[in-house]
Length: 578
Image (tube, helix red, strand yellow):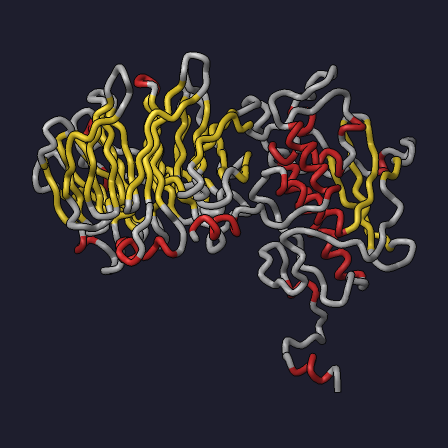
């Protein structure tokens, strides 16, 4: 039944008509590495010099709707394209089908067909201009095949423009469950992946298992052969969820946290790379283990019972522990994630209430150092980046200054990273990792998106639809033999390896510029008009904005379309039919 439930949610939004799928396929062909063909790549700096203006709106020949005139200037070339509202809908839908995410939304459609008064037309023209500016501003959508075709950019550029969308190299999959943990061990040539059933019925936990025994979790070990092919060397299923996973390199051990509060400890043989169960720890009184992290000395374990435990990784003796219930905002909160700072014997603990606790775990019991209130939303994941500490919470990643032990009160929020169109209330950020050498930050969202930021920019320059739901895990690998690459784990059970393309120069944002006024270029020839013939008024549109009754669009101010004498009363609508 869980498989059928996942099957119903597996499709990417709507099925697309063939002509939109053709654009999506062209986009997929264009995003694999450098551009093909004999032409040289156009520098992204040249595209950043692009100028665009939405100059006017004019009625179609049959006066059924309006088309919008878009002037583009690229170097010495200057041209014009005309597009109907429905063609903007197709553009966004084709980008979505090509795995671009975090896209702007179209303004809501009007109830009785296209708007006809000049005020509404001007308002819509401005909203469409903002959408185009948003798409051009982001490096990945700016170089997308769909947008280049929409603006007729390829036909006015000297050479090929390469796509900056990351390339999916390989997939590790268990379609029965969602991914709950990823651990990489390149030195041991082992990739570890844990899964848990995330369907609605499985949320009943052990109660559901008693009613109907089932497989609710899994462990898979993968290894890379000499020919480069990946092979699964071990698989194991569980009757309960596998909630957390971590790997310790020096002792060649990995730890698995289970739904019933137990932690299984495995050793990996050097010759066969087969795991052997060496111990089972009961640390959380039958409550789910929400987090595990390990160092050469300690294992940090957090549980749904609000308990923190620090264990010696070799002797597996309890070093320190305690419950944090009294420090939580309310009795419904729990410990959601953690980070082990082994160098300074500290534990960073995130809560579902939006707090971050910092504790000294050098001795038993642990001593409290400081609390940082991040927000009212859950803290999902944390990681360290040289002199800063990254905290994923709500819809953003906060960059905190990293202070020495006993000086935690000096911690400040240095920056925040967000994706403009992935907003709180619609999505939640679930995972975070960092590429320290490249100064890149990666965030995974509850809708399956993965966003990439430069450390110096607050806005994401790439957002891809990596998974169908819940990007729960992200791991960056910098060096050989597996890197440089990004691993992402999703709610549909896939772990995907991504290759980044492009350079720092390519990843810069576009500075919005309007086309030079014709008043100062009277000798210039009139720009060529592309796509002027109008389309059928009955042409269907497809996409997330097709609901004409939608009123929650954050891009549209409903008051902008009102006249002074308009009323908000529902009685006016009823009276109109009397």
